[in-house]
Image (cartoon, rainbow, N blue to C red; front, side, top):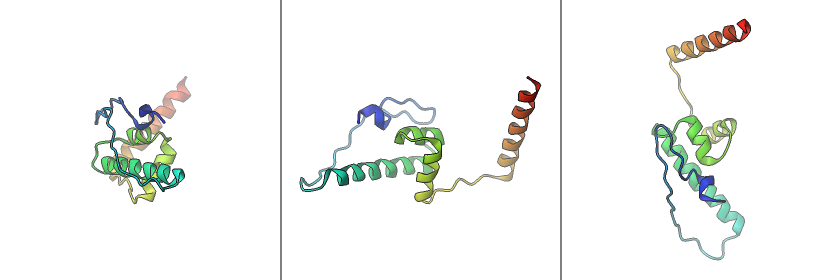
Amino acid sequence: MTMADFGCGYKGHLLNLSCMTVTVPIPDNLDEALVRELDQAAREAVAVRLYREGKLSHGQFASFLGIGRGQADEVLGRHGVVDEFTADQIAAQVQASRSLRQQAHKQ
């Protein structure tokens, strides 16, 4: 993997991620697969924390981890993160969806 795989240089609306490397000493006797698993777990933990703090949007979260939005929902769910929406937010989304459908049908 390259630094780009970790979001290096991504300039998001809420967070400017720059190239940063965190080095964690790992014993030589650990299996390479376990090291990759630890790396993934660490990146997920950082991304989840930033998402919970509102510093990453859903799209930025997915991009940071190099996954799609559906997979991002799965990762967030594994970490117990549930997006809570107000009735007004849901109503606004429904209205926006209706407007888009009406525009599409007019074309």
